[in-house]
Amino acid sequence: MQSTRSVPQSDSPVESCWSSAAQLLQHSTVRELLKVTEQADTISFAGGLPAPTSFPTEEIALATERVLAHQAARVLQYGPTEGFPPLRELLTTLMQARGITIDSDHVIVTSGSQQGLDLLGKLLIDPGNPILVENPTYVGALQAWRPYQPRCVTLPLDEDGLQIDGLEQALTNLAREGQRPKFLYIVSAFQNPTGTTLAADRRTALIDLAAQHNLLIIEDDPYGELRYSGNPQTPLVALDIQRWGAPRHVAYLSTFSKLLAPSLRVGWMIGPDALLQRAVQAKQGLDLHTGSLAQAIAYEACCDGLLERHTPSIRQIYHERRDAMLGALESHMPDDVRWTHPEGGMFLWLTLPEGLDSAVLLQQAIVRNVAFVPGTAFFANGGGINTLRLNFSHPTPDRIEEGIRRLAEVVNEGVRG
Ligand SMILES: Cc1ncc(COP(=O)(O)O)c(C=O)c1O
Image (cartoon, rainbow, N blue to C red; front, top):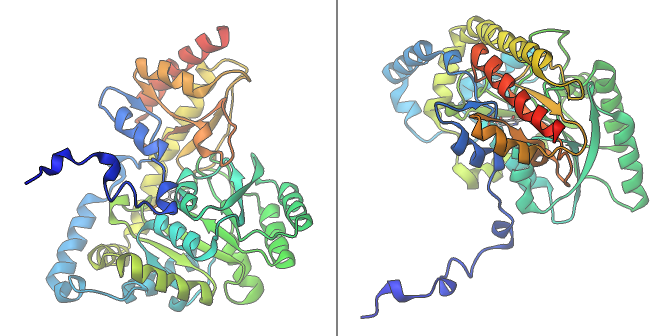
């Protein structure tokens, strides 16, 4: 009998059978980088990880115990695709606190907001369809949508978030080509990767434009609750609901990942009825439903007032870390380096002098046991060679000070050539 080991790889049924979507899948640069950088002696500004000290471990343990003691038969069983009904109900209350008035029919539970992104890509993008994305934008959204082959049209950002005139220009350009974008994707608060937040006047202008152009907006909001300074902003979906009585132009994604724990993989989507109905059908084919045990734990913990008690303590930890990073940058970076001043979230964004390549800098930084994500990963159509993303939620203030000092040495050497 012939050994299977002698079969050449090129004849492998797998290698010859990839779908065109599979051929477009790519490694996530950030995830690959994390493997190298999350070693104990490296000061990593690379990940988007919550601080381990921010996890409400005890409270999650107690919630799990209560759920299993009283509802095991329900939460260990298959559940509805739309989500664990008591959690959907509770989400309406949580959303009310963000100014978003919905009933539980307008919210479905997803396996993290990442799944919401994939579902929306699946439902909305055909190959070649234009979609509007911020430049730079969340790399996980680009990764989720790449297999659906959109044509990404990039929009300029500044410290107040998406520039509305840039959006208008893009809509005009597309209209000239006889095209309409499938949607605009925006991380409206403390954006990943830049940390910037869409200003209040731009929010109203955006909702006006959406109505005028019949534009669908995907508002991704994992960080909105993590504000350390400045004034709260109303989510776009809340403005949309105020105008139309129900979500019409905005599909809104959020998550417990940054407020409780990312491993729960519990997020949610709010949106127009038709979109949610199709998302449920698509989700049935993906995972039937988000794990009921995790949903029930999140529900139980939140019912007990965990978010109200816990969120202020997360804010306090990250506030201190953000200030530590801003202070260290001020003390150590050369004058011609610029950075954003986020009012919340987990990231800030550095722009190096023209001519410096942050990917080259990363190699030198890794030698000094410090890491970050080079900015190019976040640009849909290339660019951003002299930019980089820094995470301040995971390292402690001491490590932030030391890491920025080392990074500044690397930058200084780069500037001096
Ligand atoms: C902007 C943005 N959207 C979505 C996600 C994914 O979050 P989740 O853990 O809920 O899937 C992240 C995670 O970092 C993010 O930064």
